[in-house]
Image (cartoon, rainbow, N blue to C red):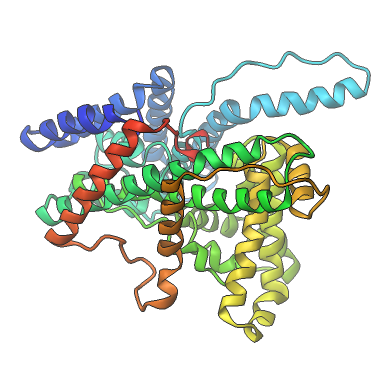
Length: 464
């Protein structure tokens, strides 16, 4: 079930909120609604996550109560392995067997049968959150959930279930048994949800057909200008698609009485890759820092070790995004640039104007997205050739609809307007209160109208 579908907006949400607000046992209704939401498209995997959560729950209580020592470490290792095994099997088995077959065939050996495994929606986000539970209990930065019901609500909370933000257990543990229920939360959450819906439906979905058309052009038929236009449109699409989902998730959770962390803070105004990852997918970068980078040693060792730790983290970050070599290269690219930041670039860039640093960061990030958007390394290589002007071809007839140009203009204005204002990075696009609600209702009408006449576009991050 997806946020930007008529069924979710006009059937699931009204029925769920009527039950949630007017019946007792809200936490039970919240869990039931979340299970229906996820099980609507993944009924089999629902059982797998439930059993895995039960293992977390049992191990978690043991981890928290067990005295410090080797036994406690074994318990947390078992808890992490329980979750990683689910992720590795579902997401990386086919990738591993395919690459192993490549080596076997070149060695003259028989290839293995490639299994057919359906990738469950949101598995990467679910597993990362479940890992935080057992690790937080091991570190004693949080207490075990008051009940198995509360822990299931943490795992299955439907606003963030499929594509984040990735919520660390210790950030929400106190809210699980006592969510706040205030009128202000409902109003602000509703405005935030509509803002995200507008980002997704009006902007991201408007440019998606252009991106698809350009990236599917055959090798040698892509003009350099067209390639750069396609890359720029994809930068708009991925930002407004993913930040739109985050807005909707944060807004829905706010209506339910939960406060989730912000996931984007004007990332396209970042002045370096270090600054970029403080603004883009903040929940992922903070998870990597807290649960991977610091356990690897962080910056506590020699300088070379810090660079290796940082690079490893982002190689794994790339692999987390997808089981394909283009995602590995995407992670390698980001890791190399982040190491360069620490080694010399952050010092050198102090001599450059802010706008130059922003432009350089945008270009580098855009180039990395070629790996992200391409289906494989071969397509990425041909796209880079087109970006470099090789081979020179006649311009491709890419036609922009008038409304697409309007929404592209709106996207540029939203992204770069903070350069000319003193607004905080985390400012909402729509203001709070009754005026903001009226503007949001108008935006909602436009979004619904767009949904009825355009082709459905799934969220980009649902495949992760």
